[in-house]
Length: 180
Ligand code: NI
Image (cartoon, rainbow, N blue to C red; front, top):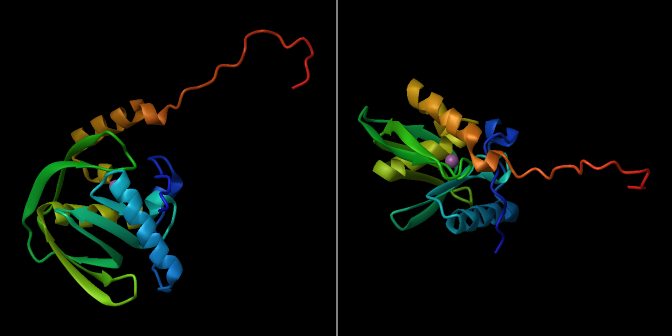
């Protein structure tokens, strides 16, 4: 079992457009396994490869007891119906805001062996697929909040504990020429 550290808001990898996967080898399958395990341990409903520092177009999901992954996703929206609901992100821990998403999505892509697959999702699965695909484009869900919520969100992120790890204060005493 290989858990990988989850990158937090502010890490440049979360703002980088991830690369298409072109090689479907053992290394990719290890990545899918590590992503799945790291997501489930967190726990979270989804995790995208950039969130563990790998800039490839891969994400995993765990919604309504269905665990899966999708590689090189391309999303289609056949309906304009929308949903409002709270959304969070493992890279922005402990915080959640109302985010509007499409209600239904059809996602085409590949599995870890390179076979073409399609996932159709509604409600939470649709939200998750949109959120994770955004991660692959360097987009975070806070970018999609309405203006007022976004302002509040960036304030809360700025004040979050995990943005401010404890600082070890330097001793105020003079060193008297001690070797360091
Ligand atoms: Ni996220």
